[in-house]
Amino acid sequence: MAEEIRAEIVGYVIEVVAAEGQVVCKGDHVIVVESMKMEIPAAVETSGTVTSLRASVGDLLNEGDLIAVVE
Image (cartoon, rainbow, N blue to C red; front, side, top):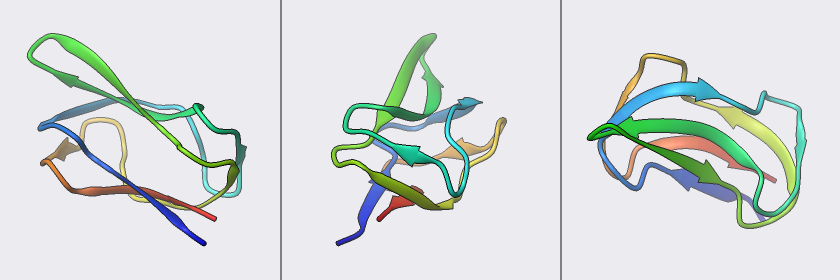
């Protein structure tokens, strides 16, 4: 079953940690978002492979935007 990683807060992507095709483990960070001078990492809740990465450095994310899909 696929896990969709979505933005929890409005902010700018300042770092992309994972890449499409990369194997990730529960708790690994996919990206880091900056909002109100805080850095907020987006982590996966299940282990798997990143099959889709929809965020790039500099992108503005709104709450609920799709960041990545892990299968």
